[in-house]
Image (cartoon, rainbow, N blue to C red; front, side, top):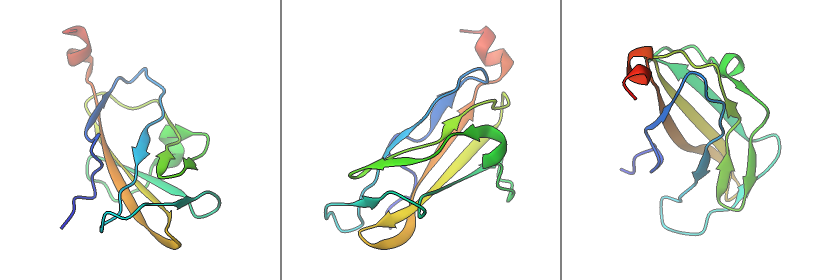
Length: 115
């Protein structure tokens, strides 16, 4: 079974960073993927294995698509030492489905001081 974590995952982000992530969506069968922009794009976010969606707390803006590429909301104000998982759903080739997960490891104060 194909991993739902995107190739870029995991990524590192500082608590001070505000950034978007570009996700290339792949099909299960190797066919060309077409994403549909509009109301069917969704991004959820969870911290440290929690079941509570915290996307409204740690993001701003909106998702966008172009061809087979999805651009996340702006991810910001993360807490050092936490691990976050972003889950992306979209209309892919005409059907709504989960199209990827991205793990973001937020650097702790200690890690930042060592740089």
